[in-house]
Image (cartoon, rainbow, N blue to C red):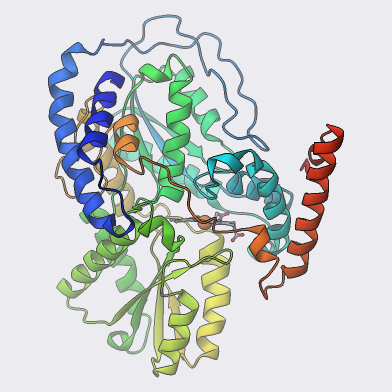
Length: 495
Ligand SMILES: C=CC1=C(C)c2cc3[nH]c(cc4nc(cc5[nH]c(cc1n2)c(C)c5CCC(=O)O)C(CCC(=O)O)=C4C)c(C)c3C=C
Ligand SMILES: [Fe+2]
């Protein structure tokens, strides 16, 4: 498997030499697709030379240290002891969320310590934990307020567990016995814990399914990077046959389920045909798309076009809008911003808005607080008279059935390097190595979405916090450098 994918990486590198530039995100993706196809055939030719590795049952798993406060800290997860039986598993990737207000700051630390969220130049990477601590500390009061408003914690773990159980049942309905595991990126159950269970259960064929319909470097990409690291540092996992479904926004079942929900909400308005269908996607910094080639924006636009086409096919001629929410920090994010669009629609005299959360399939802080409270209030203040919101898919039966179909369709690709069966996704299906080597290969430094030093000069409420923190951090770093003692560990330790 790794022999194949190394060859693919080399192929990708040589075929793209001299082709690096910002404006080429789209061409870049087309190139990825082409390379993937080349890799597929190369992979198939070389398949015979790859040793058929037997997955193994685990006799004594080594516990993994919790990752709060650590960057990718896991070592080996398991030892190979005995030959296994073929067993299927599905690994659901998700973000994770604080379950109580006390979890908020360590959760934020984990998020900002992720180099796919804040990508520092390599010379400054040693500062990432320090920066993560500062930013988490500064952001924590605002985030905590949001989580307090939705009951004191995120519902994400509960909903994702329900989705996992529903998916396992749907697979069983198709005659497929498969364990479904939940692997969160920034909170419990951590990816390391999930993989420990995968190994303990002797899973030999794993389908990796991010619960994000559209691919972004900052979400699915980040979880896949972590998996890559963990797979490479463990003997059982490095031989585990797997395939990744990188994104699935174009699946008719998903699109159909979204349209069912939209229609049901439209019919609650007195004049459904007058309602503006307002898609609000989670934003990403613009540089992710324009400099690192994140397909997120393109996938989002395609996704909205597919949903609108299906709505139209069902005889609904509504106008629609796509905007991006949840911007953090001072850099430019994808535009238009949700708040600007709401104001603009209000000013244009749009009477009714139906908000559709589009980048995430569970209720979470950004649907329950940001959309239901902040944006609703803004819309009503801006002149919009009627407001509605489409619920998240959660365990919607049609959606879960579609995920089960996606898993069944992916299973033949486990352990085989191959492009997506229909070739119609922007990031094609494949194993981790192939996917990540074809994708965001250079991990180029990006402007950090949140920079404490910039916060210090903005007009935001954090201005003085930011300045004080910056001065403090400089003093502490100087003290550390001159005395050789670590003050930061003591001062900024969370828990
Ligand atoms: C597709 C979905 C998401 C993208 C893209 C994404 C990018 C992204 N997010 C941040 C910063 C924060 N995200 C936070 C919470 C959060 N983010 C997503 C999804 C995406 N993020 C979800 C589902 C959640 C909520 C989980 C929950 O607890 O319910 C937070 C914490 C909350 C807050 O303070 O607002 C931050 C911070 C960045 C910087 C980023 C891209 C670089
Ligand atoms: Fe986010």
